Amino acid sequence: MQNSFKYSAEVLTSLRAGKAVLALESTIVAHGMPYPENLEFAQEAEELAREIGATPATVAILDGEVCIGLDGDQLHKLATDPSVGKVAIREIGLTLANQGNGATTVSATMRLSHLAGLKVFATGGIGGVHRGAEQDFDVSADLIELSRTPVMVISAGAKAILDLPKTLEYLETMSVPVIGYQTDEFPAFYSRRSGLPIPQRVDAVEVIARTFTQQLNLSIKSGLLIANPVPAEIEISFDEMSVHIGNALSDARRQGIIGKALTPYLLGRIVELTEGRSLVTNRALALNNVKLGAEIAGIMSELA
Ligand code: PSU
Ligand code: MN
Image (cartoon, rainbow, N blue to C red; front, side, top):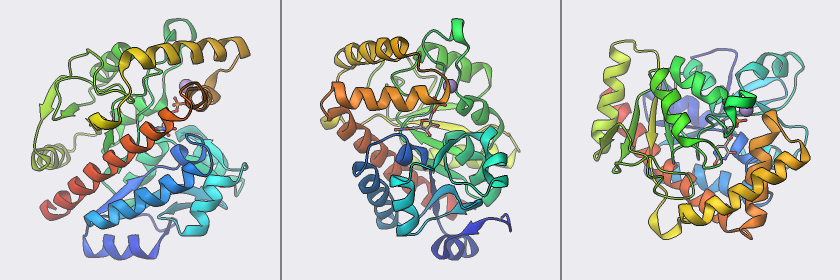
């Protein structure tokens, strides 16, 4: 544990008692969904984790402090305050130095969770290799962090706006284990299927928990990426999404949107193009990951 961090009372109690804690990120709230759906999602995610028996630890930087677990006012600030920046690993230092506010991405949440003593983290979909990366080199810091920080990340695959085959190749090169939960295919965020085979499949949560425990016992420093497909009743087909994603990418290109602004722009544009349906699916897939993450965190705490 890290003394300089500000832990919520419930997280502190759970950590001291060796009980299950599930880390949650904050960029999905501040930059991944519009208000008020983002706040509703954040509250629902925390409640769902508690129902399953894991204490939620939403990670963010507020007033220059790393917060592990937030109260209702802090969640509200994240969801509404435009001064809350998007903080990946490389922005952590300056945000703290400026006494600033930041929503943490998958990369920053992984690192801060690890320092805080948390092992399991649920998000929506990770960042990855962007389409056209052979030209502009846009590769998410999430992939780098997965290769060097031992935290399990529960995702619905990588976001479909990305180049999924290149993302899988990159994960392989960087020695990041990828496990499909009850699937042989890498899920494509909004859709259950991408047509891309996944290297390893596991059907039982106990095996996932034991797999990560083995990695930790051997001091393997990479994370473990769990790919958990969106529930069938709420998915949007890969073919339908491909059209919207193509249109959103052209709009981004026309407007010259690049760098850290690209992913939030694309997610927002796709919500518009699907008349809100992608937002319903994004919320459902992220909650589905919280559910699985909370179950795994529970088993991990018993194994420890
Ligand atoms: N999952 C979602 N919505 C999001 C994200 C994940 O359902 O907004 C965020 C995560 O914080 C992830 C970030 O780290 O998108 C990726 O941003 P980039 O492509 O700039 O690395
Ligand atoms: Mn990028």
